[in-house]
Amino acid sequence: EAKGLGSAARNYRLRDWLVSRQRYWGTPIPIVHCDKCGEVAVPADQLPLTLPDAKDLDLKPKGQSPLAAATDWVNTKCPTCGGPALRDTDTMDTFVDSSWYFLRYPSSTNQNEPFSRKDIDTWLPVDQYVGGVTHAILHLLYSRFFTKVLHDIGMLGFNEPFTRLLNQGMVVMDGSAMSKSRGNLVRLSDELENHGVDAIRLSMVFAGPPEDDVDWSDVSPSGSVKFLTRAWRLSGDVTSAPGVDFTKGDLTLRKATHKALHDASFAVESFRFNVAIARVMELVNATRKAIDSGCGAADPAVREATEAIAIMLSLVAPFTSEEMWERLGHKPAVALAGWPTVDPALLVADEVEAVIQINGKIKERILVAPSITDSELEAAALAHPTIAAELAGASPQKVIARAPKLVNIVL
Image (cartoon, rainbow, N blue to C red; front, side):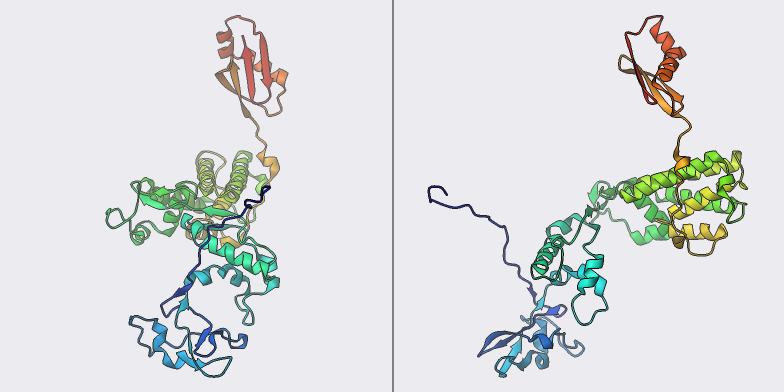
């Protein structure tokens, strides 16, 4: 550039986008072809241009667009000169509609404009988009293009349609995509018939993070059925009345309940639904143990735990959860119950695990109070029989204590 031999340029890998298709079902192209005036746009007061009734049309392929058979619709007058003209018989590809459908959702009943700017400013841009990886090179690209054009002409106040993106994985079989040629198809209808929709949904969610592929050969719907049955059985074992004071219940189980609610809440917000289900499973086990060999079915903490299980499970197993909710004495629906409030005081652990190392190698683990000091943790570590045997009377050169988690003894 300094020598005047050339200049920097930005190169876009964009090509012309063919939006027309030779089929009946689609958005008509609002163009009239006139021998005198050429291609003339349909006036705004005649929009939207609607398709003719297909009832008496012969839509069989004839080497031209099916709409050409609708002669009464095709033959029209030129908006400019009033002479005879023909409507365009192609229709727009479905990408034209799917590229901005999300803008129509907030104004779905608006018959006067594509969308209301007030509604758009209230609800959009989209907070979370979930879709397959193939969307990244088609739909998402077109949606961004439409959004940026609409922003440039002042119809939108943002130029990116989606704030966050999550590409979910695929369901495969024996490591390969399902196909008839491979003979590895799994009929969803059969799985639903054999195990029920709640169990299938739970199996899918529990199989792993949503962005990972799920190999159906590794999934166990029968195991999900057994778990849901165990959870459902809890609702019939509870003997305390609805509305009982939970604060009077067993403290250990209450802590397990609030820990599960806390962890599940964070997991759901982080799209780690499998982790949320794991916490529910742990709480089901703790509740069953409390009923059978602990505080008993009449304890208020058992009701609190079982109600929390029903509410958390409602995210993925609504039918089972609804039955649990009614068996617990509540009116439908569990979806209206709201998420239980977590008591921060019940999240404080009574004991934490401290690791004792000698020269960086783990030798022992002990349970200590969360409030233990460095000096107290050091004394507890040196007094432990295992550590005393390892030291064999030797004096440490240095002891590094980081209460309440770690002690490293340097010889």
